[in-house]
Length: 253
Ligand SMILES: C[S@@+](CC[C@H](N)C(=O)[O-])C[C@H]1O[C@@H](n2cnc3c(N)ncnc32)[C@H](O)[C@@H]1O
Image 1 (cartoon, rainbow, N blue to C red):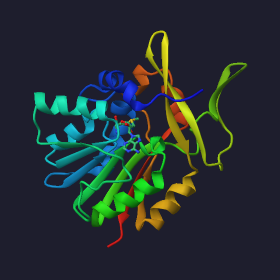
Image 2: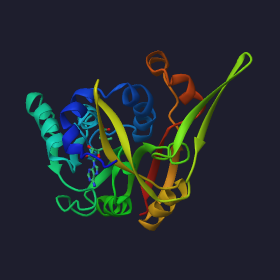
Image 3: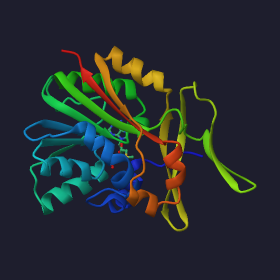
Image 4: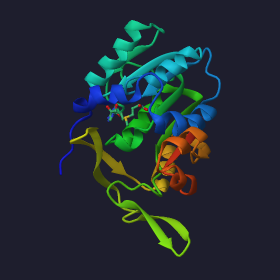
């Protein structure tokens, strides 16, 4: 089954995340990401693959000078619309993560890439380009689907009920294989749209970051908050096995 483009999902994606992010972002993935990012006041921050800009706006409210880049023109249009309605001084560009020509070398203090590296076909090219635009000592903080437990189209939950106990398993296949797949999104009650996604093993990310001149400085596996546990049927499962991770890497001086 082929993939739709992100362009086709722009409207739905904007509504899904609104100004605060959906439940998975707001109550599961963003808290450890924001902890790792830390204070950003006065920093020049690039939100790479920024989507509708809900995080860009959060960083701008925290005092950062924010630039957002995303390859999908209709999604960037949604972000610009939010900026026009409530200006926070954010500049958005339509652009590919592998070609950030609109940004000078060593011009950015911190790059955040929220839940997008696994959606970027040439993630090695994107990481190289992040290395170019970051100043020496600058940080790259990226959240993504956990390569060990969420392999696109090759992983699933198993809920095993035995006597009075329930055991949650996560089965994974083809872990070592670099592979491409499609992610289904229920965009309407009776319509599923699909976007492309790419699996690489965890060691691939660490090696690629090293090659681009980064040192990995932190690694988190988001744990459900009370809000997530209350709101998502997957809460108790994700409490046992993380589906996402957050990597912090520092560009070597
Ligand atoms: C799951 S969304 C995440 C968006 C946003 N960071 C968020 O947290 O809501 C993935 C985004 O990656 C963007 N994307 C995919 N490939 C890209 C590329 N090569 N360069 C820039 N953006 C890309 C898509 O347009 C989409 O907006």
